[in-house]
Image (cartoon, rainbow, N blue to C red; front, side):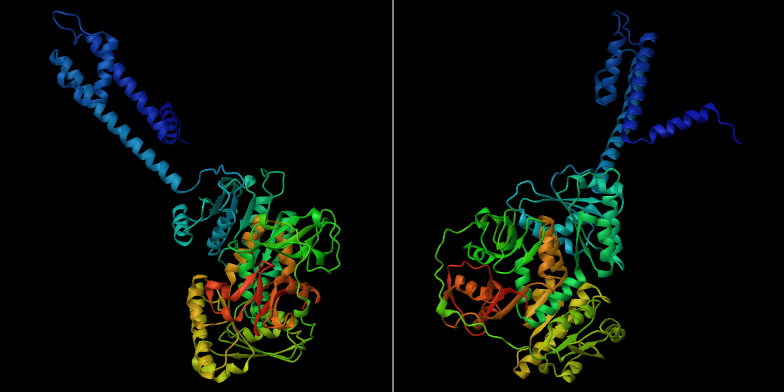
Length: 634
């Protein structure tokens, strides 16, 4: 074994000291400068070379001062006089100063560059309070940032903090490009692994008012989400109060594990089930996707909860007429339960909150009206429409397709038929395995290229009542998936124009930007799956009570949103106010929340004819083909 010498120990100590960075280097340079200047001062003083033959020379402290000035500024020695030995000593001091100052400049430059690189890495601690924390990075983040900024545009100190395993500058550049307007909301990006408890502390999760966990674009995103929740909730340094966590789960089979991990601190949006239900509901009701988008984003009317003491002791039916500019849709009970469209005779108790659609929470104010000018003569008698078998055509395939078929089975009338056409060879096996308990549907699968005009001609698409175009999102990226969907939609549009029959089409898109391109196809509805999930995540992050509201809203067992013929509620071509429409819906145990005008169904500037939460006193004349938007059980 090698014997460790004193020199080895000194060298090891010096190396460790130098490795401590810029401060240590500057300290060593200062020590070296002090030793050099003081040493030269002693040498010049003791040698007496600074003395003049006639007068005594400067003392030690004066020589040290002169040496310091020449070290910092080489030009100072230009006016020196004295003996050749003294001038030589000053020259040595000046040359030493050039070396020391150059070294100092190099150290400072390197130190500043290192600090800038460190800041660029985004590893500094976030000192924000009451911020929204987003963990992870995916295309959904741009919609979430836009919505949260819209929700907080009246809050001067709003802040969104993003922690993702991605370069800080790249994140900031992408956000600036995709989200040009964030109002007064500041967006702070930090680079780190959301699964690492140490990196999590950089984003200061204990001070966040809500935490959104995004599922990454990997093969098993749910595992990532569950690990991120564990890193938050099981951190020994976490705060004692519960977190408000919102996360997306892709596979419903992972929901139970996620709930065990998140306990009462996390709420989950099961995206595959959600998109499946919305897609199938929309395929049977033109305009429903617009209703959901208008309801879920923060730019129009949203869902709020408010405790209203003035309504205590009154029935839910009376609450429907209590507001001029807000549409009551349900109750959040004092015991924590939530119910949309409860029985009309339900009494409102102390501590209950009304669930209402309004432009802002400030708009939920009780009206002083005692008369509502309801035109009873304009109300139609309830009529029963018998469901008849329907023909559905599903073009394309992804992992959500089996869930959509099962969902469709719950809504379609007995004897309905579904034809699935896709180039995916395993689609037929998946249908046989996962759709084996269908009572109302007969499903047939055909393997073919859904972008082929010849294939679409052979299908005779005009014979189908509803057409659903799915993207091959399991096989391709977002842009290629949407490109194939667009090709199929263009062929369907041409077939529709040639046949003279308007086709009822709903299509699934992945990128919101592609919706504008898809609108030239004149399809009825577009389901931008990632956007809808992002909207719900943003809504729940701002109000944790909305999780139960959305769960009830999208649950097929409860009340859901339907667009029903206006002539079933009021007589056509008669001007009525919306209080009259509410009364007509109430008689059917339904809640009217808006309407859709057929004349505007292709006008994007008018929300495709959809009007949510209209001012109830305004009068409108409905025509045949217009729809009333209601909450109903069927």
